[in-house]
Image 1 (tube, one colour):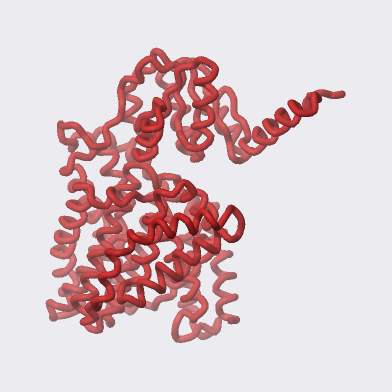
Image 2 (image 1 turned 135 degrees about the vertical axis):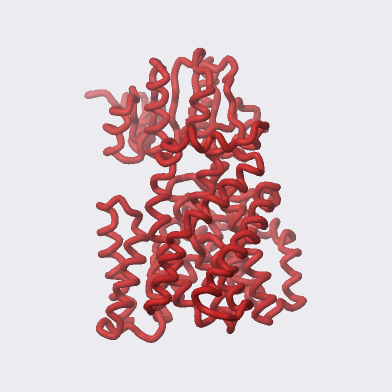
Length: 523
């Protein structure tokens, strides 16, 4: 127990130190793991990372995958560009990494093949964490990346079954019966209410039914947690459940990143192997980019999806650990995965600026055809544009309609946009951070713009781009934190409101309507 307390303390210190450097805290957590590993017995480190830490790490991964499933649609996984790119990239990556593994470590082609397979996967945990932190899980490129990762995880399970000799028994076929659980799970979520019971319901579904339940029938608990989330993704309260589990998942994932950093100290060969793989990491992303473009995605979508996938996978470690022949390579693989995390995390923070810098070069690779992620150039007769059609944007839309305006909603989530259209609202798929959208859209009839997204970077980009295109109308936005107000005004916003403060004022006005007293009056 003392060791786990020390590990959490180290994670806090290094996570805090990473923030002033502009790095995500997970880089600090990985560094803390390396430092603890290097210190070894001097800090009481046991032979393994410690049962409590391992348990916390496992809980974090299961809850993360459950929340990923909550934001997915089942049909998305079967889209041609998801399945096609997943299979082709896996085959080409294995062909690339297998000879490399044989040259460095072994004369056995079978073992080299297993190492090559482990390196072919991308990290579901890191990609989901980075996309979620940027509020891009629901965007087209975010859904594409997660869909590819899910297909990769399925491939990993097949590989484990083949090479470990642990082929799932007949009970594993019960996975095809899981859709029958959907009515019961939806009713369970209805009964859970909105308090701590909702959190417990989410944990029970992710850890008990999904995690432990799937292991009982011979399948990986990670897949079970993901499936449980998928079954609930169409429930009206799926987003609320995901938000309720947010902080819990963040705390548990600290254990995961610590355990990756503490997985082992490398010898010279393992260190060279990790450095070579770090240098080869861009090839993984380049291959993803060209495959996605070949499946008719636009250059921006292909670039952002590929960047999310340009990392080695912790699932590769699971594959190596579960196959006796590959166990000697667990530490070199762990170092390679850690190095890729240290590279990928800060680079993903700069994804949008990087695309803007290389846009002209990347755009040349697009196929001249209609793309599945096409965005509108004509906004019709709309006079107000609303970016972000969540609860805040939807409420704004209804008020503007009531006041006689002609709003158009824009959202980067294709499924959310389609749901609004089905409900009779004028909503289209568009991404405020996409320069291609801004270069083609006609703003001549737009009189004002409302930015209802939560992500600060997206709001800043939209505001600056509107002003750069000569838009002189009012730009109104909300802010979650007071320090964001000055940033928005500097970018060109006319009015910025604190979300919670405005909610309080609205409540006060409603109260005034029942008492006859003006809440803003001095009397």
